[in-house]
Length: 183
Ligand code: MN
Image 1 (cartoon, helix red, strand yellow):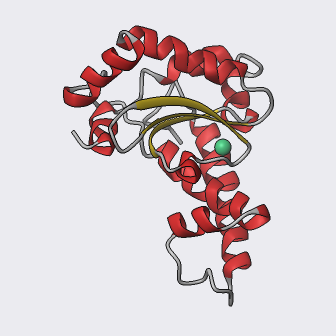
Image 2 (image 1 turned 30 degrees about the vertical axis):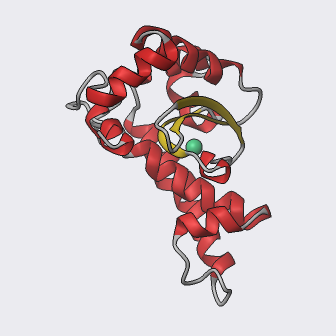
Image 3 (image 1 turned 120 degrees about the vertical axis):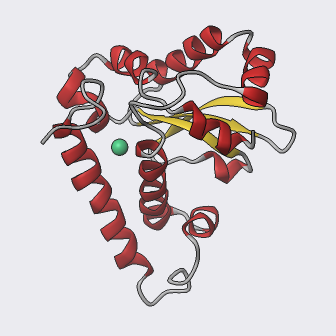
């Protein structure tokens, strides 16, 4: 099996990370909501209104879909339009933004996610989220996320998290990130 995202993310990583880790979060989520008041809620509503094991599994289910679907080997390679302007305004330049985002990912201790999000005024934020955290909990709109749990990179990069973070830029589909921002 070959992945369209090779060599940045291998088919083996997709098989384990998407096929097994993500599947486990979805299966656990479905067991936890079965017969409860959450059964008919949207996944986003469950994330906003739950905590503990239900939040962890709901948020991890959502975060992984958001993560995997933002990648393409044929997408736009840098931000466009309003998002590009706002990245320059809030971080100085696209290169500075990438550097700050990689630093946030590299310095997050343990498992979690590094996020780019926006508020209602369109201002941009880079945040570190531990474990299953999601910026929706803080009223922000998620735009881009890098998974920094070891399961995301260990098969391909072993302990070299910084290299994994740097290489992910090669497959981020900025067309999609711009749509998420509202360009
Ligand atoms: Mn993951």
